[in-house]
Length: 272
Image (cartoon, rainbow, N blue to C red):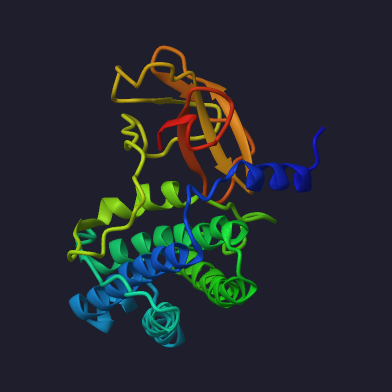
């Protein structure tokens, strides 16, 4: 059986920069940090401390939540400065629609955003050419990992569900992030196209071994597999009659794509 390390290497080799420069990657990171910073600021302004206490986020946990918001704001400042120092114009914050209506929903969404944020830094790392830029990204990625562990605890999930996190390429990350973005200022739109979104009829409470049923019966021509990204590895199951089985041994955060072959290259993904 292929080792986990070999699979991680293969996964990274499958990623392509899509012509992105180091500055493009910094702009991409800044876009994500703008989103996260706005998210936390909105949530903390919308709900009083008592609402968080009611779901168990109280005392030092509430202070930690506020620190998460503060560090996301600091990441925005640091990335903005780095982009300006390189002679480029940093992207600005966009307009967002997060969809949470209470403190519990905000914490649940934060858990998802932190997972995607960490996957974004892991996915971008092998695409970076400058050791200085890579070092900057790494110092943020480790903090994002701390955020995720804290938010998983706050959402009553296992803080360390497995031994490996999952890198996600720029288009995959932007596919998820774009669902929260309603509009961006002129000049702040990334040169990254999201994949068509996957809509699933039975997404809630699905377990390994069960079938995911896609809403769109007219998937793009050639779609033949569902790919599940988890623990830095890819697992494929055939797409048959508009449904595919969830593979065993998934744990923690997982991402799903629909592909034309057993590959996660951008050219093979038709929805994600």
